[in-house]
Image (cartoon, rainbow, N blue to C red; front, side, top):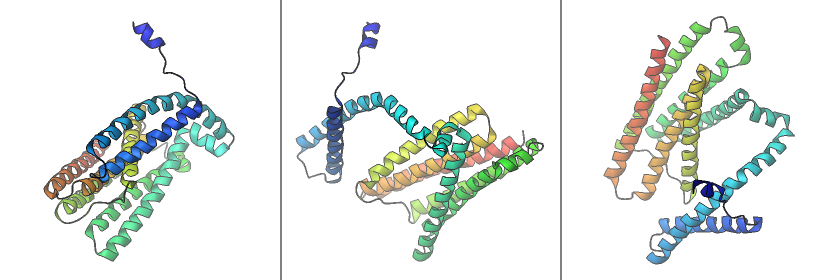
Length: 294
């Protein structure tokens, strides 16, 4: 019976049929979002039918997309190989991490400046705290990029043990300081002001990206610890913390959009999630301090 199940394959359909299926799935997904936002727009029976059809078409579409991934990989691989710099990003993991870390640092600087200006103009301690968070995050990424500059790395080979202890203490202190800053942001979030809002269906795109970010960063963090390379562990930990804070800001936006007139529940959830993220960052900082003493 098991062998028969293994031999069964999902029925093949032509490309134009799959394209139509993906279009129907997307259309139903949009209708589902509209019905969530506008609760009284559709009759109850029609609304439930749309939800059910969305689930069914999404499930079928996911199978066909999964079957097409190997073909897409081959096509993309051939395209990438024609450009040397793109192929290096794909094939050289260390170079790829450096490029993405530099890009993340660039965006951290932009977000720090944006939140700082908004906080100054609106006299908002919430935006001021966010600016401080992004400054810290950017500083950590900048220092990691500086530490992993090939020329500096060569010079420090002889002082590797001392250097690693210093690096652990530095990042331990920075993580602890970040936990304090984020804790202040959570207090503002619960008692005074704060949170983010996204217009219309943008919130769903932001949610999808935030969940993708947390899953990928968690996987990268686990892989880095298996390799036991301190520099890789540090940059992956920074990325994971960034993703966790993104989930927190997403939660504030979701609660703001869908928990109208439930202020007590919103404050409780923001306080619990924010407190958990701050505590996790604090523990991570203490871990690095302890690691420096080993």
